Image (cartoon, rainbow, N blue to C red; front, top):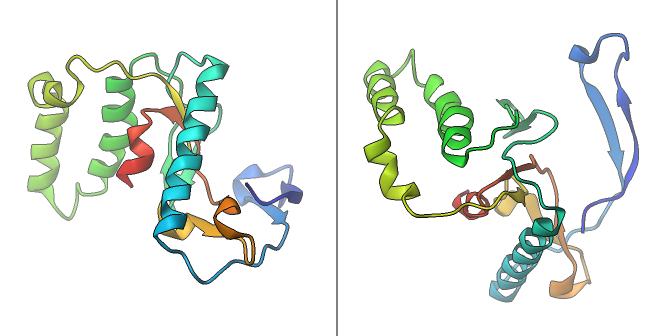
Length: 171
């Protein structure tokens, strides 16, 4: 489940660039997270992915941009092609972060981004169905509600978009 939203608004509605705020319910989290809980997370994530297919979204992206790691902007414009979305809107922005400090890595990365032969190994023959993703799924963004057992998994701090379901497993 997701924490219930109590309220949200812009800090200054005339200047959205100043940010926004959100207040969500307080949920007491369990300290223990065992192998059974990890399995339950995978099952619930698979159920979310499967249910999202019922929407029938045919594009990759999202209606709004968001952030990962509370700092890195994530552009989510709509694209019909997964290869283009992944290379241009996920890999290229990460590569741009390396430009100044690691120019050799940056140059090599640009070469690989433009190489259908390199990425063909990953994309060849694979049909990617747009799937609603958490978008920033890692151990710090999932927890158990205290006293709730493995059926009380809480996902939070999402950066959602429609993409390849494997992306939620890659983080």
